[in-house]
Each structure stands twice: as structure tokens, then as C-alpha cells.
Image (cartoon, rainbow, N blue to C red; front, side, top):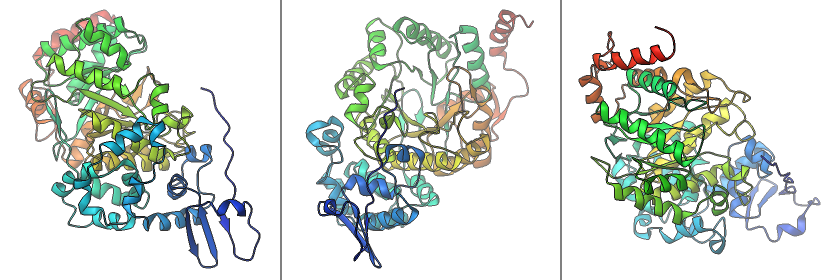
Length: 496
């Protein structure tokens, strides 16, 4: 990765009666706030949002962070006074230059926006926390909210506020099962292997199923990313799902263009995957545009492989992706992230998840920053109507550990997170990062009384994997259906 040095902007503070560095530029600054004898200046809406953002290493790297806690609080006070409708007249990335901006503004629903159109950002926070913001009211509001509005209000919220409001948001999707119902927590079974070894993948897959994982998706990140390998893995998962009649869906997390080619070759594609960002330049660096996603969605829908629904897209995001691509346009990383959810929302996905700590400590330095980002992302996604999950994760060079991930897992479970990851022993030996394990999901379901997707829950009991769905208790004995495959795997591994 090529790093680009970004200079820190000049002091944005002026004190009456004292010389101010860059005073001439203040005449062009659009947003000001006077606190006592000091007047603070913010040169644009993007600058105001960035300065109001809770501190994180990525914004420091980009040079957009508030230079002091005092400046951050002042920016939040000024942001609280800003009318929500201001976000419809001042684009963070110019309309003419960015197709994500055009998507956001062209699809904005003024009728849905009407109930809150008179509010400021601060008033909107109070409304969201109040009793009038019911699940039904929040559902009707989605189309009237832009990602920038949602990101802005999140910057004024404490962690408990983010949890409370997200809990009230209902986002349900379906393919071969129903995901996102209240009182449920789904999991992605992630049986990655560093060499795509079929026996290794099968062993992880079996292990995960026996812990009740895999109702969101069985999804593999291929070690060798090409069309032929993707098709091989697609067929492997399709064979398993068909053999055991599992009410779930599969996905190979390869580039969208590879999946399109796989569909053309007759591969059994359930979900189309793509990592997405919040600016056109970010997505261009990933090798696609909105037209590519539309083509892929249409191709997947034409296969008609869903049984209870037709949500066929799976997207991953992560704070810092636009900055790492030098495609952030001076916008803070959390607002860039929220803009990615507008892209996701447009294509009616089955699943979206933020890979919250994966990019590294350059963007989210420690456990505190990772936890805050995970709650922000989940809140923003759900408020915009996205089926939001979270890869609760960190890299080994971050100032974080598994206890931080336990805390975030529990908080997201309370907040109504749609799904999390399930990986053997929390350690992805292919992608080389730490995330949540099969037993972590079992912990969250037990302590918070959260169920798998209903169709998958019935299957767990029918296959005698769980003694009862109510207790989340795995069966004492290995189900008969899995005895043969397990013996075959131990034979191949030389352990019999």
C-alpha cells in the first residue's frame, strides 16, 4: 500500500483582538461558532463533520481531526444547530464528479423526509431517542434520510444512544431463510483456508454447523482469487447445502466481475459479493461502478435460487477504506463509511457488514476506537434501512484484544445486530486477523436470548444438532448424519 503524506490544516481558531494565523481565509469559512470570547471557524460542511467526529487514528492520519477536545465539542455544538435540510443543498463530494453523490441526491424521498425536515441535527437526535421514533416510524423515514444526515447525528450521540436507536430499527431480508427478525442473531460461517484445501474447508464448515453457525451465509474468502477457483468453492458449498437440506445460502467473496463470469458459466451462485466504499473514486479503485453492481444483481436474480426471498447481494465495508485508496475527498472516515450504505441500500442486499477493525490501527487505533466505530456503523446502517452486521475484529498489531471484542459483541447483540462472523477459534488463518468464533456466537445467543433465523433454527433441531432451540444447547452425541463425513475427514488427516 502506498501512503501519501497529508498536511494538517491551519489553526481554525480566532481570538478577538489577537492575530489569527490564516485570518484572511476565515472570510471564506461558512460555519462559525462563538463560545465566550473565542470564535471558531469551519471552512465547509465536510470540515465541520470531521471536527465533530469522536477521535480516531484514521482522521488524524488524514489531517481532518479536531486539534483539541475543545474544538471537537464546539464543532458538535455547531453541528447540532444545523438544519437537516442543509445536507440536501451542500454535497460533500460534488454532484458532477461523483456517482455516489448523484445516487444519494437523485433517490432522496422528500415525502419520507417531511416528518423531520424542520429539525436541526440536535433536534433529530432528541427525536430519535424519544418515544415518537417507533420502529414503524423509523421504517417509513429511511428513504428520506441521507447518509450524511445519519452520520451527523451519530456524532452527537453517546454509545448508549447508538444502541438504543439501532435497537428500534427493523430491517428484514430473505433468501433461503429470514434474517433480521427481532430477537434473532444470525452468523456467517467463514471456513477460510490458507490454501483452499477442500478437507480443511469441510472440517471448518462441519465444526461451525455443529455450533449452530451459518444461517446468515456460508461464505468463503478464496486464497486463490480467480473464476475457476471460485466456481470450485461454489460447487462445494452448494453440494453441502443440498445434501443436508440446509436452509441457508452460500457466497464466495470474490470480485463481482468474477461472479458475473461464474454465472455465465453456469455456476451455482446464491449471493453476489463486493466490497464497497462511499465515493466513486473508492469504488473505481476496487474495480467496479454502480452499473457493474446493477448488472450483477440482475444476473443473480435471473437464477431464481432463493426460496423465501430474493435479496441476492452481499456487501462489506469498513471505516478507512476511502482514505486507504486516497479517495476520501477530505471527508472523515465515518461519514465516508455511511455513504457506502447508500450504495448498499440501492441494491436491496441480503447482508451488509462492516469489517470494523480489519484495516488496522492506522485507521482505528485501539479497542475503544474499534468499539465506537462498530456501534456507529451499525447505527448508521440500520437507520438507513440496511441489514447491518459486523465483523467484530482486530489485527494483531492493534492495541486491542479479545476482551474488547467480547465487549463489542455484547453491545451489538443488545443493539440488535443482524449477524456476526463465526470462525474456528476466532483466528482466521487465511486472512490473518482475529474475529469472533463459533462459540462466541453461542455465548451471545445464550446470554441475550437471541435465536438463529427461524428456518435454520428448525433445521438445527430436526437434524439433532441442538437438543432444543430454546436452550441453544448442542446435542451430546454427534448427529448420525455427520458421523460418516467426520470419519472421512479424520481419515484424510491421518488421525484415525
